[in-house]
Amino acid sequence: MTAIDQVLQDAVARGDVPGVIAMATDGKDITYQGAFGERELAGGRPMQLDTVCWIHSMTKAITGACLMQLVEQGRIGLDDDCGRLVPALANPRVLDGFDANDKPILRPARGAITLRRLMTHTSGFVYDNWNADMLRYNRMTGLSRVQTFARPEDCQPLSFDPGTAWHYGIGLEWAGKVLEAITGTSLDDYMQANVLRPLGMASTGYRLTPAIRERLSGVHQRRPDGRLEVSTFDAPQRPEDFMGGGGLYSTAGDYLRFIRMVLNGGSLDGVRLLKPETIEEMGRNHIGGLAAGVLKTASPAMSFDADLFPGMSCGWGLSYLINPDDLPGRRAGGSLTWAGLRNSYFWIDPKSGIGGTLFTQILPFADPKTIAVYEAFEREIYRAARR
Image (cartoon, one colour):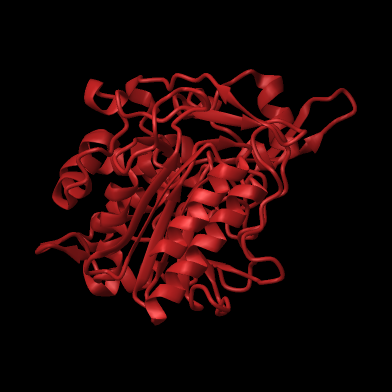
């Protein structure tokens, strides 16, 4: 595994990343694990295998597993109208631009907001980091993302009619609210009881307990000149912040357990979370001929333009991006992937039986230097697997 170590060590030595944790699996065992660099520049604390990171949208895959448990139980169908459960979703509006007086133009949406659409980013909900009109709307109204979930009248409008386009967005946040309406419990409590504790993911959760906080990584911002500097942050810890689309803290080792569960058809170490046919359904493209995965930034401080598979028309499953074609020297076609805002990444390759994850804590998202490290790490994992 020396070549893999070298990739990560060199990235730290060049200053591409201040610290990095990476792990890989063949489904049965951990085939690689390594941690290099510092939790924060000049902080004197090394990155370690059990360092905790804020994984942002890597939360989505775990929320997806929670929701598919409810689908298996017959408590909701993928094509059910979620407005019957969550009033804010019953009468959505579409933002059709702005009038001459700079007032938002809103109209009733055509089509229902279903669970499938929430999970595949085809509901019409978008993130304002990658949508200039929604960023403008949110700044005008002054509502935070959390506030938009509080009352139906404050619900963020859609960017398009449900089912007509793909745009990365807050669908999984709303899907988490659907789960809460069905179960009568918080997403945090449900996730802990039905996914995280059964999988032994003891360092994963929405709440920063003292034991988790003391292992927390620092975060960094890449400046326009390429330099990295330490950025201060403290995440909110209010109950309404249990968002299905982001917010979890985790370790690479914990997340690898989730990856192993998926590679093993829904079970791990004798514990079954989902049926094999459910895992297969989650990994199928659910958006037809729509193309997924390309994000054009509206907020350069938060994200670069993102396209993990340039030139490839990707699909989207039930909480995963899917590359249709093989990547030479890397994952096979039909692999599942996504990422977190602070440049944490994972992939699950059912065909090859390989999965992995790489954690850093850097903004903006889709940082080219971090992605280069991630891709080099993945290549070395597959090279080692072939030997």
